[in-house]
Length: 161
Image (cartoon, rainbow, N blue to C red; front, side, top):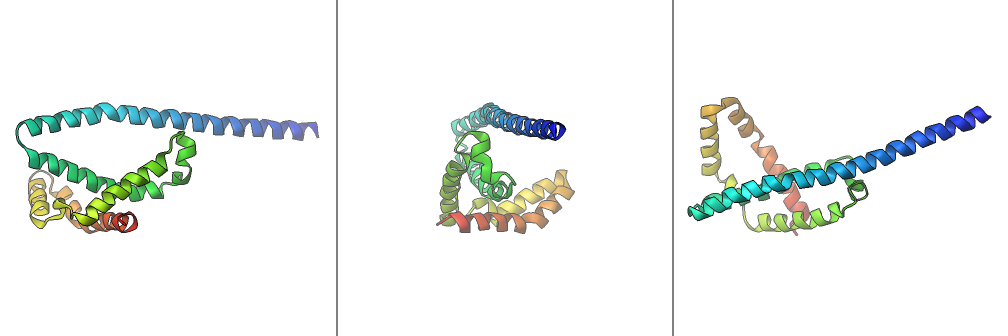
């Protein structure tokens, strides 16, 4: 009986320590990931400021439109993430609720404003340029374009009210 009690206590202690370590590690990695992204965003912003200084407003707008599309595209992956439902508890931040507010905002915008990046002349120009350096990648992107559009449309339909 003592052995069984000791075994149960040992297993319980290991499980609690493992779960606690995982949550603590997840929180540290979560925050470190966000902090690590800041210099990258700063460098991108610097490039955008230089583009604006040179009068390349269309290039900056294209970058922002691309960011909106990427936000819509990848949100469905976030929602399908196995731990999505417990991200708030794991991260210690109100991640999910605040992110959904941002998704709603960009989905409403995209519902009202079609992505200029989907225009045939833009897509064909990008694919033609890519075919010069990486024909296989260009073919892969051309084949997957419908899937990308469908994923974004799903998010816009769900959140763009």
